[in-house]
Image 1 (tube, rainbow, N blue to C red):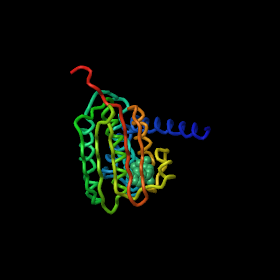
Image 2: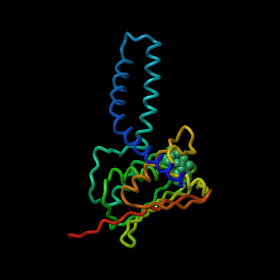
Image 3: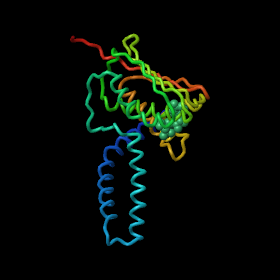
Length: 231
Ligand code: ADP
Ligand code: MG
C-alpha cells in the first residue's frame, strides 16, 4: 500500500512539474533562443564563441522538442471547459500525426459517431489522445493499422485506439503512466502517458489497456457523455 501511495505521489508531482515546465519555461526558452540566434549572426564573432552558441542552440532545440511533443496542447493558464464532439478533435489529431503515420507506413482508420459529445477542456483532450496515438504509431515501425473507434454506450463515450504493433507484456502494461518509464532510450521521455492518464482523470474517465506481444495494443478510454438537458 505504501508503495502505491508513493507511486501516486510521484505521478502527482511529475504531472505538476510537466504542467509548470510547459507553462513557465516555454516563454523564457523562446526568448533565449531568439537572442542566441541574434548573437550568432554577429559578424565580429570569434569562431570559438560561435561554436559555443551553436551548441547552446542545439541543446535548446532538444528541450523544445520535449515540450512540443509531450505538452503541446497543455496550456494550464487557459483552461476553458465546454461541450465538444470527440470526433472533431480526433480528426484534428490525425491530421497532426499523418506525416508520422506516413513515415511508418501506418494506415489510419477512423470509425466515429457524432453522438459522442463530452464536456471539458478540448485542448487537454487533444493532448491526451495525441500522446496515446503517437505511441501507437511508434509501436508500428514497419507499418500497420491504427484504428480509432468512437461510440456511445450506456450514456458513456467510448474511444478505442488500437494498433497492430509490437505489443507489451503484462508487466510493461502495469508500468504505463509511471513517470519516466520509457523503452525508447534517448527518443523517449516516459512522460506522454503520465500526462494522458492525468487528463483522463481530469475528465472523470477511465482507461483500459489490452495488449499482446507481437499482436498490438488497444487503449479503451471511457468518458461520461455530455447529455443535452436543454434542446
Ligand atoms: P515515451 O513514448 O516517451 O517512451 P510514454 O509515456 O508515451 O513515453 O510511453 C511509455 C512506454 O510505454 C513506451 O516507451 C512504450 O514502451 C510503452 N508503450 C506505450 N504505448 C505503446 C503501444 N501502443 N505499444 C507498445 N508499447 C507502448
Ligand atoms: Mg510517447
